[in-house]
Length: 124
Image (tube, helix red, strand yellow):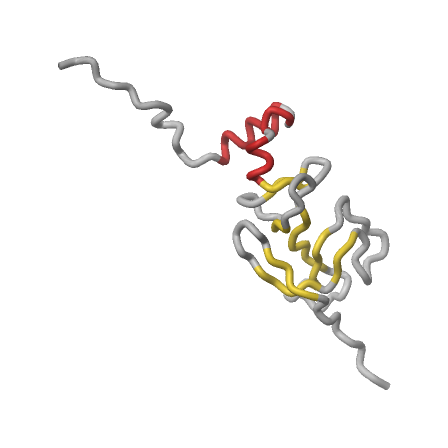
């Protein structure tokens, strides 16, 4: 009898924003060897390399629902709000998102808040 086969990589996922690359074993909403899990989006998935349990998997990323670029699920690259959005598309369409998302995006911005605008010194 043959030993059970490990899931072989189907391809390589690459985030078009941060450059993260990883081999994926499945793309879709129902990863193999999972009983009742259905993902909310079509995702690139790989078997979890940190556990021998074949039911465990990691979600690598998906496609932005606006521009279709491949993005990882890292908070620096995308967010999920009913669909996956890359952060450049979120920022371009920020007013279309709920206030909670807009506030969250404000918190993610670099610490530019301490210098909101340059005021010219009128004292001479």
